[in-house]
Length: 280
Ligand code: GUN
View (cartoon, rainbow, N blue to C red):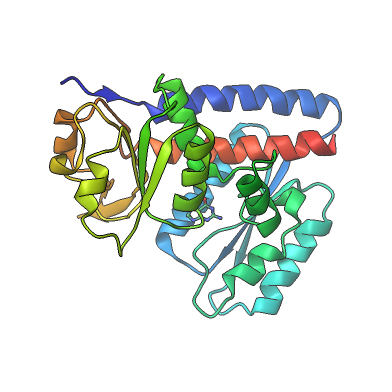
């Protein structure tokens, strides 16, 4: 079986070129899209993600404001930063990088973002619209996964899809999007019994676990499309959830790095530009 490598890096690059053109068009109308990213504390992985988001923004011609708050920031101080960005007419999108330090209430912080500036799609108004099938901002990582499937020409109609992970950031919205694309969807998680019995039925398998090598070849249906959302580090090397030997069984596979990661950033820029287009 030859396995197609789904090149997220290349697909994201071409999307970012389209976004740069949309940014130019907005600037001609006097609107520069602006994204505020709020980072609390010094988590090294979050530091890297936030820095990359800022660089991508600026490369697309957008304004990027990275707001760094100390580890011991209070809930009130965090919410007052969010309120400042809500009120800033030059900021179209606000992102609070997760996870937050344990003493902070994540839900309260996300609820404080104006729904029209919520480029992550995590506000309950936007999450509710997604559930109801209304047009809304779609969370970046699952939106990027759907775009990868489309770009790779993978048919979703009537297919069995299995999502491993039930987070608000990936698993739950991913399951909704696959359902909207007419897949029959199963969501598996840490309490699932006989995980392999489920995953082996999947024509489309999405793994969002965060454990290197978690998905092994015996868990994969021959010819399946496998989307690897996991990112972990083993001896300093970035690894996905999917063991490399899965390429001998799968029909298509996203690499890590260079698969879903670059798409998450491209979708963030797209969500921010859409918010700016609404302002214009
Ligand atoms: N942490 C990991 N993924 C994400 C994401 O998509 N958005 C935010 N805000 N934080 C994250």
